[in-house]
Length: 168
Image (cartoon, rainbow, N blue to C red):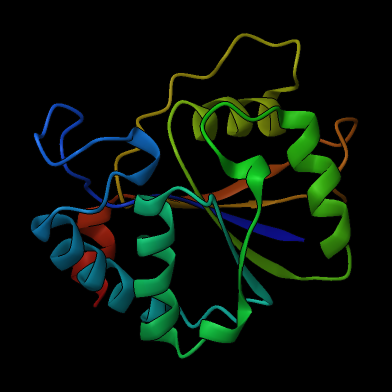
């Protein structure tokens, strides 16, 4: 199974006067524009996603909607609560069990949850956390044998937002 982890696009600042609830914080105009460019780069990668999974927070949902529209994959978008910022790694693995027969899953989420999850998948839960620079809009591919804490993943690539935009 290939897991493609993506961080949501650039959102409004937390202290923006229009932001009442952090969960509802949307992408900024710059974030929407850059996410569209990133989505075009993802399209060039020609990945046959079985599902596009997202945190239900507004900025993540907007990110996945832009990617899905660019790929023509709107019907494959699903929200899962275990991709929210304060989720537990074990809960995400349990939720991924529903997709056991999938080959390619896009997961759109937040920091520091993404870096923590990648660290656990690559180095194990008891290992020291890897220092990852997971920028907004970045995408990485990890291959796992099964969604289980006992199996380690293999990092195949990690693309920055700029690299993805250049692909588009």
